Image: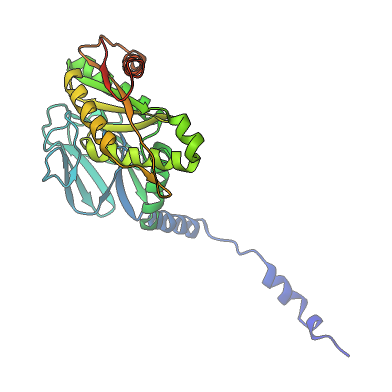
Length: 315
């Protein structure tokens, strides 16, 4: 009996396994097409400033960036003009130009004096604290990119910013405040008697309380205030343009809201209070982030040593 599997001509088998030699021009065209597909959509991503992680899709021929609510890309930063910069798109090419802003528009460290074309990875600085990264992404990557930025910047349990982001942000804000002589305040607070809560009700209850505290705090603060988990049950608020006296009022309002909130887990009511410490420029003569955080932390421990469930300001 003959096995048909072995009846194919030898040269036919060779052809089926041969590697196709591609002309260099064909290869370049294929690579260009692949790059064009992957650079399907242009984005601006905030990598520094009050709105870190926010993505703006560049999907119109002209778009303004500024502090005005009418701007196409709204960025609430006091160092940014109401109409600060303009993006102009011609096909897949995107250009940036300054709109006679007060503090200027900078591209990779150089001031923009005329319309300049943007390249993937370029960094645009607006004012003193906001930096935008220009990039191209496949349209399907937008959700993934947002998730990646959130994972890098936020605490996984509470959704608050993480400590690393807090310190970087505060360093930028402090440099701006010292240079321009503007107020800047830090509020630090933690949960009173949190260890007994974990011991009595369990760690799942403790986690639920921390998540609820974050929700309450974020809903109470201004949109340009930064709320972060400093570690464990301790949280930090950075409030730009806010004096220490005003920050103490904000802290007291937050304390009262938390004090009146019913924390319930698995059908059990868990009494929760917080102690808060406040420090701010110019009342606190801080020159570094460690100085400012240290002053707020000392005020926090003063609140705890004074009986808890209260606000103390740095002296």
